Image (tube, rainbow, N blue to C red; front, side, top):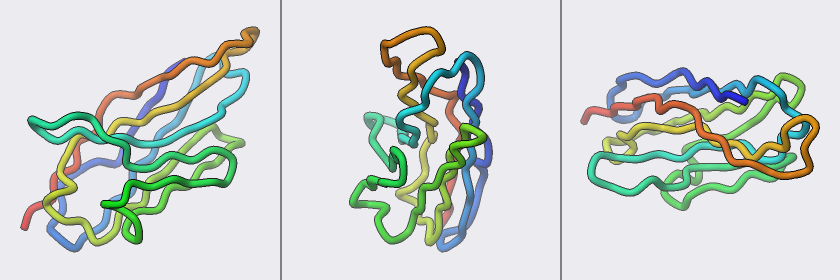
Length: 119
């Protein structure tokens, strides 16, 4: 199973970006998808996750970010609006998946995609 993230970039404060992540491989069931981020010198933190249609957001992004998923395509998206410099970080796609032929759940991480917000 692989997660491929895209959509990072540089934007000025107040701008918007949209991140995408696609899961591929031997996927039996994709339970949860979401995004974490890690700023320089800081620990990785939850941004938003979604299972079925129930999203969970970090307080710092509520009202500005929207997570959505396309279950048919095993994709998750993060629409980020009103970005500020504190949102600068590497954003990592995350998923909890039951691989095909297995009954166990596994956590998977994509490669980071860099988001830089300038003031």
